[in-house]
Amino acid sequence: QQQVKQSPQSLIVQKGGISIINCAYENTAFDYFPWYQQFPGKGPALLIAIRPDVSEKKEGRFTISFNKSAKQFSLHIMDSQPGDSATYFCAASRGSSYKLIFGSGTRLLVRP
Amino acid sequence: EAQVTQNPRYLITVTGKKLTVTCSQNMNHEYMSWYRQDPGLGLRQIYYSMNVEVTDKGDVPEGYKVSRKEKRNFPLILESPSPNQTSLYFCASSPGQGAMNTEAFFGQGTRLTVV
Image (cartoon, rainbow over all chains, first blue to last red; front, side):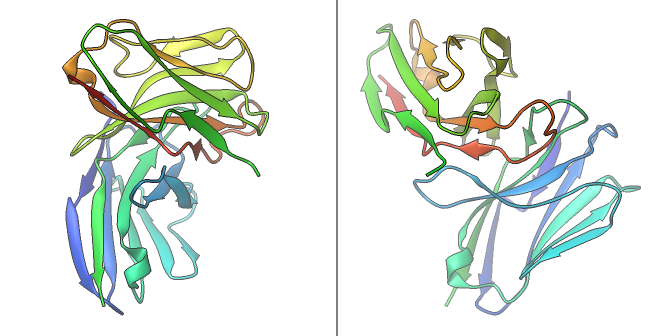
């Protein structure tokens, strides 16, 4: 069964700290790894995505680190802010398939 | 404004009473799908559609039906809802063929309670 495992389930970080969320996948055919951000009462929205030909992608305070050999990828949020408090989902898909396989989600709380 | 619109946002129904959740997108996307979100399980795909009149099962299709008669609309049908279908439902769309693995746009969600 295709699977993406995400940890931790919840995370509390002080304002200004670094938030780190990890994901591991099984299917080596996956070639697209997005992260989605979801605020309460809203649908998930694409935050940042990476393909396996690079080991890191940075957009502002958000960075994806990708380790192809370990089949792991992680989201780093630098200088975390209370406005970053949300649920974060990692996901994966492969080739011509548009199907996203989601992790179980991480609820992030950034304390002021 | 580019968006995916779901209705209703909230629904409480009784076991066995047929219901439909509507989904409409205004981005001319080919690919549409339905997910359910449950605590600790993330989002799981129920059904998807590659284009008009083309639909297929996702990971958790039991108890659900869909149709895609028009490109913009992708309703989710529960013929005989049961309490285990109580969940938060999301419709999503993506550009589709020729734009592989691009962004999925999600609706605002429908919180369904079956009693």
